[in-house]
Structure formats: structure tokens, C-alpha cells
Length: 439
Image (cartoon, rainbow, N blue to C red; front, side, top):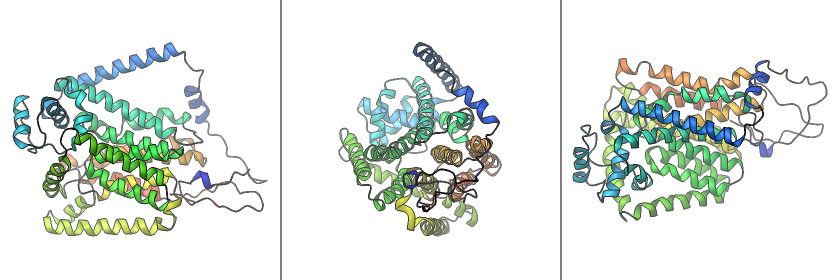
């Protein structure tokens, strides 16, 4: 059996006579006691939440004080939002360069904004602040979104068994390199992580329309969102989940209309700019294009051809493995395949984009828990992903690039496809196994 099962198609049955129940792990009761004690009064919960928020703000402020906000990734998000408030055009080179000069930014990797216009409108409240306090607020928001995504993923299962593993799961989150890079650089990966976790949570509860609308938020980063949306939309289409597709379409239209409030022709401007930048970044990032770049020594034409071949082979392998049972996959199984696949085949991606892999990593851990895996195997699954991310990043300073971080989505894809040796209890006489084999 494999790691993920569509629980809605699995019959309920008792253990057959003679089957010895799994011996309880000695660590599990102790950890469960820590997280299932009597609930605190509401006032105490509020006090703890406020104290945690104050601590997060202090830590974020200390981090930003050590950085140079005008010369950070976050500045590009903030400047686009600020220009919306000031009546500028993020897609006009003169306005973009003047904004950098006005706020003391000297790092100019591009001469216009590279993000969809709706993102600038959504972040407009941050544009009301100066860049340093806005950066601080964004770090806190990103951390809260990451914690919320963890909670949504853990509570997405109808038979949750996450409580004993909460502390090691949080450790896996806080030690995960893509999260640290996201907070340090001020990127938007935490928003995408939250969108994926929210979509999974909705789909696992049968709220297909709402989950599709949450998935549409990935359109705010088309380089990653395009492949991910395409993969999950194919699963939704083959499974005839029309409500989810309607929610996805509705969310996409909503984002288009939001941008149209500022500039009706913004998609044309954005596509023109994105097309120009695509060739500049191809082959320098941790995906199959980066592997092609390493194999061929950086020849642009050869990198493109070999990258296309590698992407095609990867897609063919996934199609051969999944096609006959793709419509019946559970939501978390579909996400576990789609997230690493999108990171591998997208034209360009960076380490912080791998933050979305926390969702399938936690889903994998929950699947192991539901199958009665040992406590340590479940608790250390997210920490294992953190360890892989750290190990893959070690050579980066020496070799001058981060292409070897491709090992992180490759490891997650392998984990999604890995067979499971143990078997569930036998069904009662006369009943067969009708559950879809999972990934």
C-alpha cells in the first residue's frame, strides 16, 4: 500500500480475530499530555496570544534592523504598493526607477515590477507605512500565515491524530530553511503556503468551491502558480469536481477585476514584462532547468532543450504512475504530487518557493500516523524535510548557486510516491478492499 488513501472510499471494519493491536509508543502519551491538558480560560489565551504577538514583532524588528530594507526583495513588493497609493505605474520603467531613487534603493535587478498588479493592490495597506516598519509587519504576517497554514493542514483530516506531534511539527516549521529565507528576504511565499493549506482544508471537508477560490491566489505568482494550478485543475477536471473548478475560475476573474480597478490593460503589460525576464533566469534555479544547466555547462540553447526533455520525462513518469487512478485521489494525495512537481518543472523558482512543501510534508506525517507508524517516524517527518533542505544548501556558497536545492522537491516527490510496507487490518469476511491505492 502507498502512503495516502482516499478515506471516503475506504470501508469501516474492525480488526480480524487474531490480529494483535499495535503496541502504544511510550513517547506518545507523554507528548499527548503536554498538548491535551485542560483548556486555558479565554482571558489567559488572549494574554498568551498578545504576548506571542509582541515577541514576534520584537523579533521581526530586530531582524529588519540588521537588514537593508530598501535593497531587499520586500522593497519590490512594498514599492509597487506605494506607487498604487501615489498614482504611479509599477509597469512603467521611469516611475519604477524614480521610486528606487526616492527611497534610497540601489539594488535594481529589473526596471519594472515583476508581480501581477492585484498583488500590489492587496498589499496597499503596507504601502501606507515607511519601508522599515512595513517590512517588520510583513515578517510578522508571514510568520502568522505559516502558523495558520500548519494548523489548517493538521486539522484537514477528518480523523486528526496530530496533537501528540504538535511540538516536533512546529520545530520542523521553524527550522525549515525556505521559511527562514522567506522571512529574511520578505518574499510572499507564506501567502502561497497559506493558500495551498486553505485549499486542502476546504477540499477535505467537501467545500470544493471555496477551495478552488483559495487555489486561485497562486495566480499572484504565475511562474509557480501556473504549473500548480494546471496540475490540480486536471485532477479536478478528471474527477468532475465542477464546484472546485468554478471556484478557481471565479477567483481568477476576481483577481483580474481587482487589477482592472487600477489599469484595465494590466495583464498585457505584465505578460510582456514576464516574457522578457523568463529567458534571463532560465537554468539558474533549483529545478529540472537548473539540472540541465549544470549538465551542459550553461549553454542557453542546449539548456532549454535538455530542460524540456527532463520536464517531459518527469511529466510522463507521473502520468504513467497516476493516470488510471488520478480522478480518485484524495485531496491531500493530489496536493502531495502537484506541489513538488510544480516546483520541478516551473521555468524558474527559488529556495523560498519550496515553503509550500510543508503542506504535503505534514499531510505525509498525518498519513503515517493514521497507519499506526511509530511515534518518532511521524514526529520527525517535517524535521526530515528541514534536514534535507539544509543539506542541499550547504554547497551553495562554495559553488556559487543554489541549484542543488532541487533535492528538496525531488525528495518530497519520492516520499509521495513511496510504497508503504504495512497493511491495514483485514476487513470482515465477505468484504474486499475497495479503497483507492494512495500515493
